[in-house]
Image 1: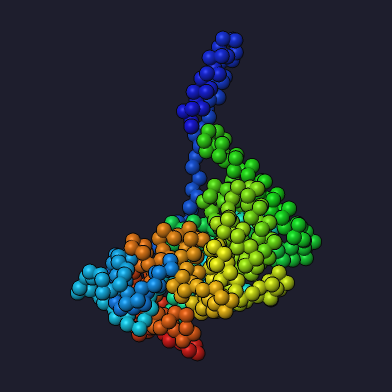
Image 2 (image 1 turned 180 degrees about the horizontal axis):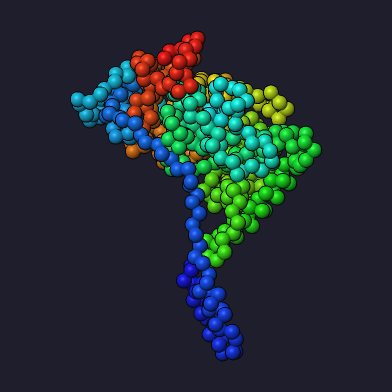
Length: 471
């Protein structure tokens, strides 16, 4: 592009020479034009290193592959941190002389991915000193990155791993603002720093919010937005400014010249417009979700997911058409007016309508029982005559969350070549009596119910034995 621009300037100079214009000054200006300097868009890159893994074979288990398939008497073979083979054990040519686990009576699934968590930015010692999830100081705080609030020593991470089979999770900033900031996707592994936990290659997310939260927070301060129409007006103003900023930087990156001023807030919005950052929009009501989809069309970005989509069951066609996922609770609703019209069949109706359904937690305790939350949603759907198999429903916990986070090419299903993020359950994973027996992340055994030394312990927990402690 730089060469093209130079050629165009040359043609212009030829014309000027014929008319006796100031050739030297134009040429000098072109020569002085500086090449564009690339800005580092990833100044806090992942430093995650997979743990040691040994080739492992799970035999004779019931396997849910995460994309709707069920294999009875199945086998899962993990090697070099990847899924090497999945299938019926009796029909497979399996290696001998390796670590083999008899899965008779047990179930194997992909690891659960929670797309809405505040572990680390609202950690389990829930005191104001460590509650860093809401930068509630402006309707637009897209400049903040929630990873800078994540405390890796939050004991909730290991609880989610051992009790819930959580192998990856998205940490979101809160919903006080129309633009809450960047989210981050983590692998559920111990880390000295948050960078040690960052899922390699996972795109950033942008937390947006509509509805009661932003209008309450800022309306109570006597400023806009104070109404739902104010929410949309302010949001549109921010995108108009972001579009201008994006065009300014696009021009600079193509043509060089004087670098525009950096604006961290607009940097994040620009990332959305460029398709590099995924929008996760906190929104309860169906009518508001429809408006947010229209707003996204207006400015040329996609809403990747709605979070807490309590009324998603009213618009599965719109969601399917937009390719937008809905992250939902099984039966948590009615705690404020915009969440009043929830129904227990929400997840099943969205799934049955051809849209992407996800079960999420938004809770440090709920993240430990997402399998049971999915079971409740599945049962509610069946009571309404919606037949969804157990294996098909597991998509709500692994494949669909991975798709919404932009990591489905790496994880979310038990398919050859994918990361060996695997849970061996000690029974039917939809039973309230079932718990993870073993959990692997990238083929590394991170938890074994029969080995207390395998359970990760954070620095915070050292020397602090408590009731029910298993350290």
